[in-house]
Length: 211
Ligand code: ITT
Image 1: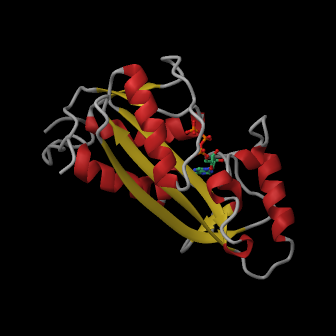
Image 2 (image 1 turned 120 degrees about the vertical axis):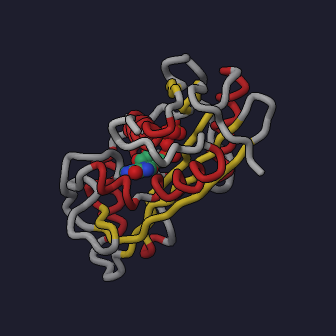
């Protein structure tokens, strides 16, 4: 059984991606932990050398937990197109080039896709929690949908403006953040993480924090 974090524990959010950091902090909000970003602590950004999302998330979480001396949570995620055999997938961040330009990354995806009739797309997310002693727990989530072009919406980050999840009309870039959090790849992985490793919520405490 995975170790559970106590309320009030400081947790390093081992990402240098501001969009991800914001979403993870929002997802963590009900659990009364104390999140701090790896960037704020000046922790290094390790090379992502694993062969899958879980491997990379685990690697990032372990490096941060060992360097920071506290529990660390990392996310490795990506956007995939069926017509491109799952690309950009694990290499989603790299498609933005050194400037991490996602307008460029989306354009590259749209060009690779051309007028291919298969527009099926999905986001994947692995979340790993690591402790400084080397223990880790990892969780995975995925959301299916289709790609649209041109991109739509200013919300979210990364490839959000070109992805419409199944059952919706809006892209993740147009959607209220709360709607994205109800169905996203990250939210699905987070649900499993919360069930196994986050402090248990008092069911009598409402959104106001009062019983
Ligand atoms: P860290 O490794 O520091 O966390 P990164 O941006 O390099 O940051 P990844 O290697 O996991 O992170 O790359 C995932 C990329 O996939 C990310 O840069 C986004 O462009 C994209 N992505 C992941 N989740 C997304 C989401 O919810 N919406 C849109 N794009 C997303």
